[in-house]
Image (cartoon, rainbow, N blue to C red; front, side, top):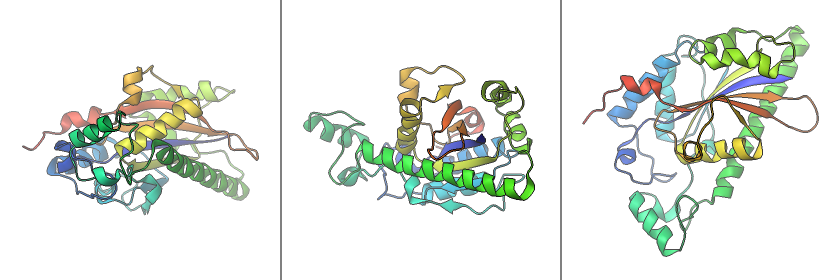
Length: 270
């Protein structure tokens, strides 16, 4: 079995987030002063975590957030970020640049409700889901390929340093050995992946994890908690288990979803 950690973070706050204006893909607003502080705060929170791969949406607000995280990192500040358009926010078409209240009004006129309503020129929820699924499957195949190459070279067991660095701030990671490992040993992560993306996109992908892939939860979550959009720089951590074989059948365990403990340190700038 190949196992890796997947940490998702929503970008920091922008002025339009605060003003409840739809950004999507066409409105690429930079981080506000509060957003920059949030990125620094999550960077400090994760500074001793050893990541092996870092991915970000290619929009400005996610790029700035990733930069804010990595510049605080003890081990990863020189890593090369891979920017991927599959991680972009949901496209909202004619609603981009308009107030959230206007999107709700458009949905009401169409006899629908947010977030299932698709404005003209926007992406459907299924299209966003497929984009997220495509990225996730690409990531799984990448980790499997690299794990196979590593095994051919070293014939060694995976190092425990990756999960040890995670367990220092996510104590529940320590308990995953007995849950996923028949020997009751440590999890033995092959990789630890950091991804910075967007609220609606992450909600869609997490829904895929929970509904389609039957993701298990370390702590029970209510339906409203599962359906909610992550706060800016909210952290969600998953442990992914991949069985060797022709068909990709990942098993997923959610350690935390939309964690915002680090935001207690951020004083909003008025």
